[in-house]
Length: 466
Image (cartoon, rainbow, N blue to C red; front, side, top):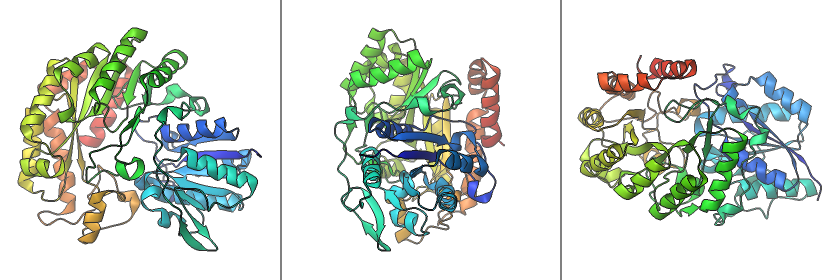
């Protein structure tokens, strides 16, 4: 089979407006790194342009296209970056009209037809993309059509054609390790303060799928509800590579929830201890998934922070959208604190049924818990989530300008009890009331060990507390 050249791109934010910004914090683009590894395994020549993390301008991206001359360009985009991905597709076709442009990621999965409407994206990949992208490249190399490839939406004779869904990959151990060698410099990525430290940070994913199906989350549309996890041996092989080759000492497990299967967590912790990896790490969890035994193992293996999806301090909203209650949440956070692990709480304002009173209750609840940090966001109905369908059905969406789908910006939903811009004021108030407490201030001051740490905290404060 002929081998081809593939350029994978994560779009810069603001590119379509001519005002490129680099994010305050950066994490390695795991989705593209997995794609690159699989494509290289098939023998293709691959380059990766992480324009998002480094804030590359249009000239830089166009130069990469000119110099590499790819046969296929692969774009990935969250909803907020969709306009930037479409802009790159347009420019790529202007430079090289015969290049095949493929778009994947959360937005293309949820809105594949939209991705094809302006004529510059040729194929939209829905869901898991590794094998799909390899099959696309094989077909392109052989000069045959794409009709037999599952999990894509494409055009046939000008008509949008939806191929059958691709079955979830069950053997997740079969996916090649992320191609970190394609990044300009692994150590240049600067994570959020509660995730790790620049130069010694790495993130990884040990499972796919999530059985909970929260209405505001689009993960199940991309990865399904069936929980599929990598073996401990497979995860450890990646961690040891990151530890020894790339000097990673801080790890962030970016699974939707790491702690769903408790025996697996214990086995992973035992393996970390047996290997003697002197690391610190954090993960996502749900309050119903932790107990004293699991927390004890996690602490011994270096777990520093658990990020809990709490969302609200109102009992009715919790029951309706999380199937949890405040007592259970408080117990889980207290157990985490007692185990010597810091607890971070994720909260959101604007779920259906929200009022000024429920928002105030959420702020009080957050302050009452032994949390060391917290995030407060405005509810955003991302395409692919049940919340999106709910809001569309009720004519609650105020804009489909995807660049405005920012978790910390003005709400894009029409509400009954308040104006959307009020949510942003509540969000700022929550950050100020939570963080401007002496104990919390002293805790975070004690964590500043370098100039970069100080700069990171200043960045956070500038955005969230002003």
